Image 1 (tube, rainbow, N blue to C red):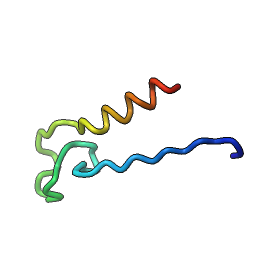
Image 2 (tube, rainbow, N blue to C red; image 1 turned 60 degrees about the vertical axis):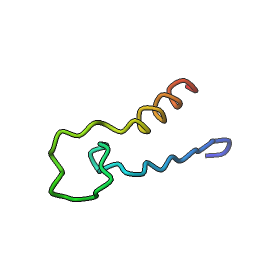
Image 3 (cartoon, rainbow, N blue to C red; image 1 turned 90 degrees about the vertical axis):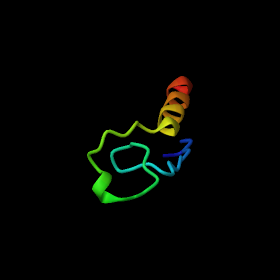
Length: 50
């Protein structure tokens, strides 16, 4: 993969379902939480670079 540029983004306070959840409490999985704003920003930046 010569010449490949990699940029990692750490999404803090995000559950495995990509929802905002600072609690890390499994009992909250499945509740109606908003999707991560940092995910939207990071994904939008990546799309604009393509």
